Amino acid sequence: MSSGPRPTPARDTIDFATAFRFAFEDPDWIKKILIGGAFMLLSMFLVGAVFVAGYGVRLIRRTAAGDPRPLPEWEDLGGMFGDGLRALAIYFVYVLPVVVVPMAFAAVVAMAGAGLSGASSARGASEAVNALAAVGFMGLYALTAVLMLVLSLYVPAALARFVMLDRVSAAFEVRENLAFIRRNLGNYAMTLLLYLVASFAAQVGIILCCVGFLPAAFWAVCVLCWSLGEVVRRDATLSPVRTGMPA
Image 1 (cartoon, helix red, strand yellow):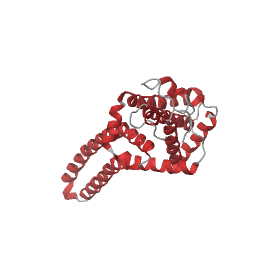
Image 2 (cartoon, rainbow, N blue to C red):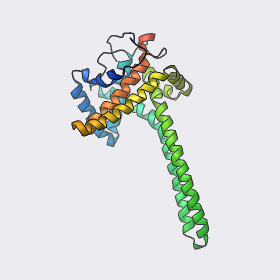
Image 3 (cartoon, rainbow, N blue to C red):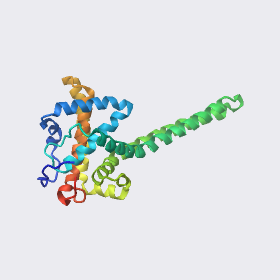
Image 4 (tube, rainbow, N blue to C red):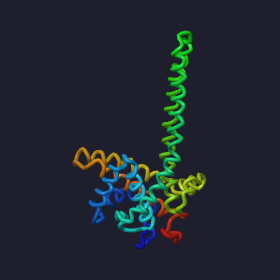
């Protein structure tokens, strides 16, 4: 929780350049980014992802409060773990059904096709089932891709409201989450664009400057969280600057 100054936003739109330089203005940015990169490495065991998510929660709150040095210190790891665990739980609740349902359907179709192919008298039926399965898989793949795109556009708003209201249930208030997006449509779209650009820049930096992949990827996550915090800072309902709500 930040106790720093809370200036009123000087402009209504997110500053594109500041999004890419804010992290490097922190005197301890190298240490913080390298530690974040180490936790990104531990994300393969999931525990690292929890800490990265918890760090993002703190970064959103500090940015929304107008902290001039919003990168949090890597301290209070217990509290950070709790915040990250809730944030990841929200993400998985949204994403897992989109992934699991197509996989379950594919498994059922595969078992049905295997059963038919085992019977020589049902060869024609087996070929028909395989053809229908191929069409079904293509349709499921397309549907899954569309749903994942929709979630990538929607879930950041759900997470932002959870972060600021400190209620897991806030992430599932669909009407309110959509209203948050509508109120801040331009800046919200800029946030998603900034993350895409930062992710691309991180990959280019790896190639041109020999920057490690994990620290660069963590920096891109920080850009996303800072941008979400800037959207919140300008929001008439959630902004601690505009409403006096504690950050």
